[in-house]
Every structure is written in structure tokens, then in C-alpha cells.
Length: 560
Image (tube, rainbow, N blue to C red; front, top):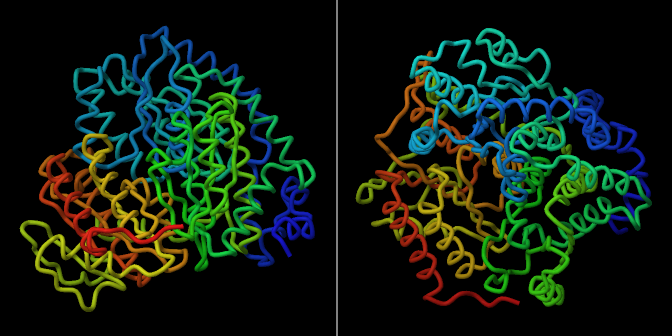
């Protein structure tokens, strides 16, 4: 029976629209938590009612002279606004959006130094109101705002909160006299919240024409209620599930250049929703020009292209001769709203087909616990032996721990790559500033590794990935090899009111993920560099590429 036939047999589309929790689980204990996560199915229909408030707020901030909008968030609270700003862009005369979803002291220092205090406004976004990253960053930014004589009330006037009603963050807003709270429905989980206040408010404040986005989204909501043969979400879900069943579990996202940032949001939605119970679909973002990419037989390819992108259309037709290809054709940047809706419905239905609950994230919480243990001075687990290879500290753990004793960094990387098996993927988990100069050599090295080994290779930034693909890494199938890259940077930032610094949090998050991956028996190695500056990361990238070439004698494997 095909996946589309299974959806028909289950009457899945109607039951999803009616928020029937029994569609997702027979376990009575899971039904209440699932019901509390099904409020996203009509967000586009309700969104126009939120526009007057947001339009008025945007006009007020512009009148007050706002030039920069600093969004402090993580995962579902920040990725939709980040993608909207990169795909659609800020309107002239409105603030520029800066998404701060990192705990890298180097990145935070550089960003704050580039902003003008007197024209910067802040959004603190957290559904639960307890997420450690935005709360820590808020403490730092509040101190920064007050550094030149602003009172607590004056600094608070620059800050807006987005959270669930009654959350600890809402109580903090009251204490610190922050400007206002924009609440999101409590029945909407973070990664399904693109069309709630978490996505709409930052979009409005940077001048995105939300009526156009919402109009496309509402039309897609209606389409997702259509019969299966014409239902865009059901067709995508059944294709993903059929591909997964056939062993093609590396969902590769290829897009026209303007739409490439959408991959970040899709990556979180797919990985965190479906990566659990020992199964999952691995999202892979393709950043190269597609004609340069070569894919193994475990790939399923989603192409998102503009209707007039003839080069990508021709490439898509060629790839369809050897790989499953699902093509999404968009008219303009405002179709982004429709894609948010399509993918949310499709991933929920894919969860039904894979037999997983798409609305929880148990392994994300596990990594948070390990991080908190380390920050409190405890030890989450006994650390494996660490090697010092010319200043790079290498730690093997989990499935890589027993038998590796390399003499240099190339050998250490080569040993990690050698542990891959047919159908594996490699994830480079990098705790470094999010800037192109530092990351470009690593992206190029990942392409070299992919071509040399035939494996899908993902480059993820920490701690961002902990709230997205981190769930898949630990809860999905044991088909990943993980290379955690950290650095012993001397730059640090004090966190007002806390015993830990930002640098301590940054390292604790990497170490917490290492010990959690180890606990799950995953194949993981950590490479702790002396610094995260551009030269150090470029040298590491060269060694990674060299290790990949040595594994194949300089020539890559045969591809179809």
C-alpha cells in the first residue's frame, strides 16, 4: 500500500483539520500533550486580525528612529523571522533585523559593537519563557542598553517580548518594565509558529508586506483541506514517506538562490518533528550550484524554484531520471507564506506515516539537562580520554571511543570519516560565529567530504542545531557520524546576575551535546581548536578536506 493510500485509509487530512489526537497516537498519556500542540492548523486564517496592532507598532518604532531590530531567540522562535528577512528582506525606511541565536561571545561582541544603542530595539522571544539562550542574551543586551546612562525603564521601553501568556518571561517583562508582550497561542509549538506572533511581529517591524504573505498562506491552508490527489501537503508527505521507506532518507533541499534560506526552517521542522524512536528523515541543505553536486542513492530531492528558473528546472528533470524528485514552483517571495503552511501540514502527516509523534522533542530536553548540569559545576558523564594534537584537543566518545589513536589532526579526522557506513551521513557541528568569512572554508570542505565519501554532509551551527537537528542526531536512527568543533577563544562576555559567563555557556552546550551523544552510543568526536578566528577554521577545513581525499586516494566514489 502506498503512503497516499494509507493517508486515505486513515482519513488523515480530515482528522488533522479537526485536530483529532487519535490520528497521532493510541497512547492515552500522549493525547493531552498532542492536543496542546495542534493550534497551528488555522493560523493563516486568523492572522489578519493581528495586523492592526503590528502595523501600528511598526509605525511607532520607525517614528521613534529605530534603525536596527535585535531578535533574541532560538529555534522555532527565531528561524521563521530569520528566513523571512533573508528571502523577502526589510522594506526601505524600516529597521534591519539581526537574529541573535548564538551564545558565541565573539559573535555577540562583534554584533553589539556594530549597532547604535540609541536606535536599536530588542525582541526577546521564547514560547516557554525559560529558554536559556534568549534569557542570557537579554541580560547582556539590557546591560548594554543601560551602559550609557539609560534607566531601567528607558531600556525597557526598547524591548518587546513574545511568549506564551503567563510565562516566566512575561513576569520578567513586568519586572523590567519592558514595553509590551505579544502573546502566541499556547496550543502552537515553536517550530509550527511561523504564522503566529513569533513570525508575524518581527516581519511587520522590518516592513515586510504581511497581507501578501498571509494571503498566500491562507490559500495554502484551504488547499491542504482538498482531496488527496490535489492536496499539496498530502502529496509531499506521501512522497517523503515513500522515499524514506525505500531507503532514501536524506531529504536534500535544492532551491533557486533567493529561496535557499528556507532550508534552515525546513531543516528544523523535519528533523525535530520526525527524528525520534530510532527513525527519521535527515534534511540536507544544498548550498552549492546544483550542477556541481553529486548524490548517492540514499537521496530524495526537493526542488523549490521560481517559475522562470529554467536552469534549475532542467537540472530537476535530469535528476528525476535517477533520484526521487519533488518540485515546488513559486511565483515570488511572498509565496514563502504558502510554503510555511505546506510544510507544516506535510510534516505532521509524515509523522503519521512514519509512526512518530511530530509534536514532541525529548532529546532536546535531554541535551539541555546535560548543559545545566555542567554549568552548575557538575559532570554529566565521565569524559573520554582527550588527545592533544598540536594544540587541537581531540575527544572521541560513543561509538568512536574504543580504538582510535591518531598521530595528527588529519589522521584524527580520517579515522572519524572511516567509521561511516553505507547510508550514513556526516554532521559537522560548529560552535563558531555565524559569518561567511569563517564558515566559507568549512562549507567548501563539507562539499569535498561529500564528493569523496559519497555521504550526505551537513554543516550545523551550535547552539542553534541543538533546537533542531539535535533531536534527530540523538533520537533518530544510528546512521550519523558527528564532528563537534569548538574553540578556546579568550574573548568572553559577563552575564549580569549569573555565575557563568557567555563563553562558559557556549562551551557547556557543546560539552552537553557531546555527553548526550555519547550516552546514546553515537559515533562522535570533538575537535577543540585554540581559537575560532578565520585562519584557524580555514586550517581545520583544509585538514578535513585532506582527510576525505586520503580516504579515497584522491578520487571520489562512483555516483549514479
